Length: 454
Image (cartoon, rainbow, N blue to C red; front, side, top):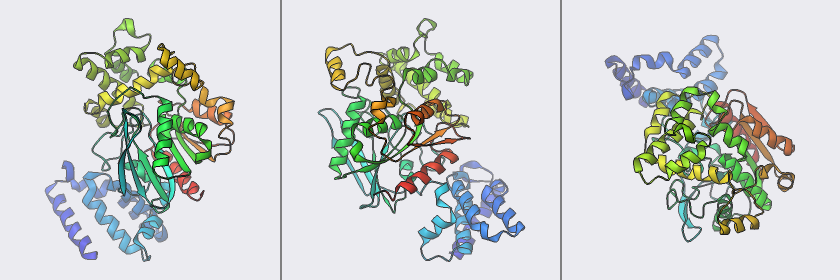
């Protein structure tokens, strides 16, 4: 190991001499600006030796995701491990040194993947990772664009209707305790057919979760969902409260008209005026009184160019609202077309249907069967007393970014008022994304706590 460190330092030094870093960054800047080295140097200088491992390795692990500093970071991690760790298990040492509750778990690979046919039309992709006989948890993906940190994935991470799961979604859970279950919802991710809107409603997805639970022989599971995933998690728990051990909810959305109007019509537009202009651009002025419907028409246009222009503009607006601080280089990735249309189509499908009455007779009958009178759910149905009464016994934690523009804190607060038994955490320096440090920290702390609920 020590020889490996020496070799890597030589490689790093050569790169520094030539001024060529991974991705073109001058390596001469690496150590100067590496927060792990800066923090470690300060602590050594101050004589706080007992803290060096904790903070330095945690900072370096974050930098591991930065490809520009890959060699430097790996070298530092090994070096710190050698100097700070004499523990029996390398995994235990890593978890101790990184102060695990403050960050997500390392990426892992699934031990099982499969496809579950849930209707004559739809087949869902699912995967299972972590501990085979562990405490089951299901990750319910959301709809908004969630940008992964560099190094995890080459793709933009999307969620919910039209999006899908991502490898980083496994990292909120302790793989030594949890049996981690991910699935792509109808029309999303690796599920087929892609972007299919037929037989694609909230209640179809609730039914799918039950079919997946039965397929995997799970009696009860923990349910974890953010953004649209919080909506679907609550709808599932209220439909099957006897199957839910706990609820971890983030970036609360209940699909009320007021929530959709704030983000897609009048509200968030006041915070991002320059981005709003780009969002408005594909829509003629005489159609801007209902932008969701205007986009719906363009996303279903017979002209492919019209569909793609609308899809990219829709996604770009979402990306502006994904984090408190958003790097322009990520917003530029909205131009990637391979997922844009599928994501925008399915998401818009849900929003438009949540904001209008069914017009077809069979849809109206289905609505009556489910006790629904507007769209796929009544406006505010999830927050109604009779709905909340079904889940009051379920341990529930709500985690909400103070500056979440996509799913504003008012909805999380409304849920807390209707459901006082739940715990609400407002993250003071976070927006919508689950990847912001304060939000990630609370999500992991929550799943660590719930891991012992059997």
